[in-house]
Image 1: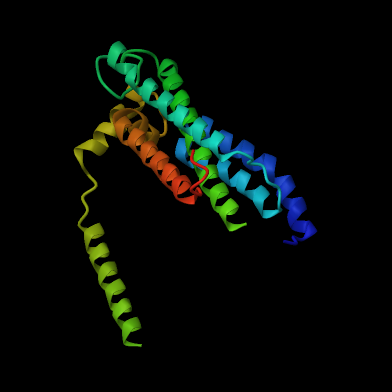
Image 2: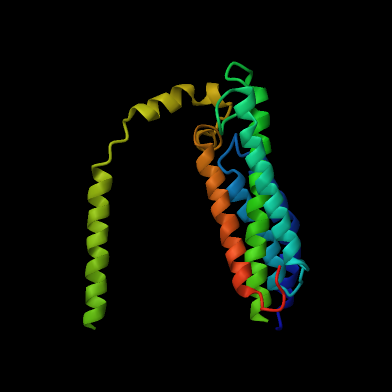
Length: 134
Length: 86
């Protein structure tokens, strides 16, 4: 497949900006609009840009699925911690009287792991499709 | 031709029902007032959507992530050949 030089250059310039924008959306999910799911989709788009210009970043899809599985287990464990500290299932593990900065630790951690999980899942889906197409 | 007219009629009916539903929708509920008053204090999140999906309704988010995991597993299972099993 032949791609034009303008497209190649623009995609190479755009790649780090899209990556950093996705990380920004994930980390600032509790302040500004956004969050783990949306930021993960933006991160996956940054990888998808490279397939447009013929660069194959993803070598092993099995590794991506493994990362996604372990991240899901970490999310479940983080959500289960509140059963021991607060007595309720699936909520923040700091008590309700603690300060706002402490509560934000949980939000940032949760958004971060959900972002990684969604990004690896979407990358695994479309890299499988691209491998099948070739 | 008659198929296109039927499809258009169905779409129009859906649109009308959708508009009727939206105009009947009551947004001045107790939950909205509660979230506006206590959402920031109880969860520490300025974005109230994050307050809902990471604190009040965290189990929904967890199973949403689980649905994505099942989707990825299914797609990879269907794309693999018989001789290379994960």
